[in-house]
Image 1: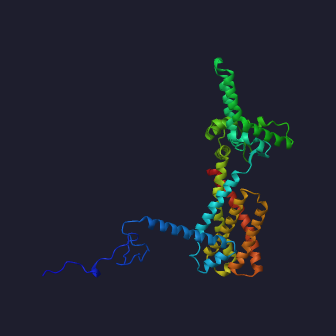
Image 2: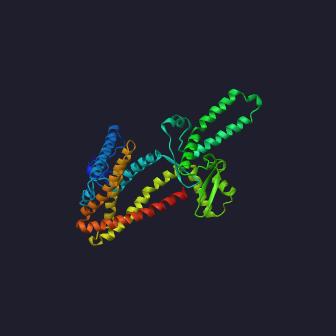
Image 3: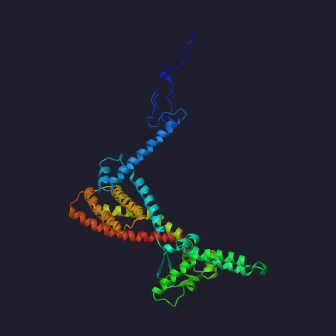
Length: 394
């Protein structure tokens, strides 16, 4: 009788996990190394949907729990360092999620504000469209979009020139009426713009200035000089061509004037770039102020990351609260609510410092005042540096 060639189950090699390559048990359903479930090469739809729904509801539960508990000063940070980590989202992940919604609503809120243009006198001219002018605004576009309004008016002038160059046989009343109708529609916002600028000039005591002549050129001011560019040149030429035409050769002036031209042509793009830079400016501020807290509480011998997480939670809570106010501001005036919000943010920081660091109210209050002073100073210069960086790379 020949010996059996079958291998005993105990002698069979253990299967390998397709995810991490580690050895799995023969009957186990999960890898002991990475936790992935045993995979046979087939994925069922119900398994995919079940895993997706579980991950979404699990994340939402953590997010909602952390969101409302952040309104209780210091609660989340104290619980986090007590070891209750899994019940909350990662602090950096939560910060970016809240920051995303804050910037989204901030952008929408700023886009809905009254647009401004600068006059030769340097004053700000608010361009507002009344309800009576709403129909003209819908026909001609956004009256507050300054450069596009000027571009549209330049197109009207081309229309008029084109009509004058037509053969006499084509200069009929019907053709003239068609040209006039198109020109009137394209010029509607320009007329509104002129009316608003002239009203602002008259109210400022500059009645000798005419708005139409004022808009023939646009100034770009540097530290010690000012360049005025013709509107037609700004419309027809690239920034590089303008710099050469106007004889701007110094590299520093060329850089600043070029960015100024780009900001005039695309003010919304520049504004959105500024808003986008807020995330990194605030992160840099949190990193810097964490060092300040480490110095203020150096006797407690805490790790730097503890102060960093504490400030991440504080800023996330503040951004979440401001996001809710921005959301309400889309429908009603929230001026008083904004004032109360900033008072709450400052007061909650004081209470959170007391809860997390555990010192007496007197010492905590002194450190809170010093922290707030340094925060405002550092926020100012970091925000300014952020604006410069965005301006020069925009």
